[in-house]
Length: 187
Image (cartoon, rainbow, N blue to C red; front, side):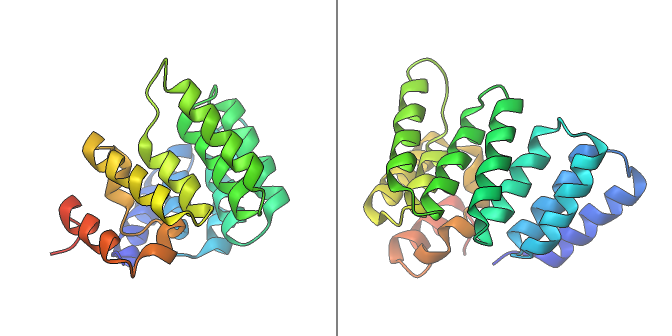
């Protein structure tokens, strides 16, 4: 499930070398998030937001960590701030959909997917983001359809597939294991 300790150690070292760098600080939060250390990810993200309240990536990580801990109202608030600060980035909008899905708000999550598909008519929308929303909805067939599309598209975020918490419930599925092998994340 990844080499979280090593990645976290490297990220913390980088943060020591450049403590005011918001991107590095957010990278530390991401390492905590991927290691399922959500409380640490929340604390790190809040620290980054204190450095710059308008840094979208820190709000994104804070919202994702809140969503994984069941703090749905806070998650949606942070993710909506992140999406706004990002200028409506499809990646960030997809995370709003994930939060809606994890909160049991299926209608809103499906509306979010429709919004992403509408945006995709004019600009790039990663299929990986759509797959994440479907995964949070626990729609297995659509999740695998969109993960295959992300694989075919060579979506950069596929490199996180082996450690992305949103896909945890699908890890035992043979199709998921096969996808990890094809991506090069399993021998």
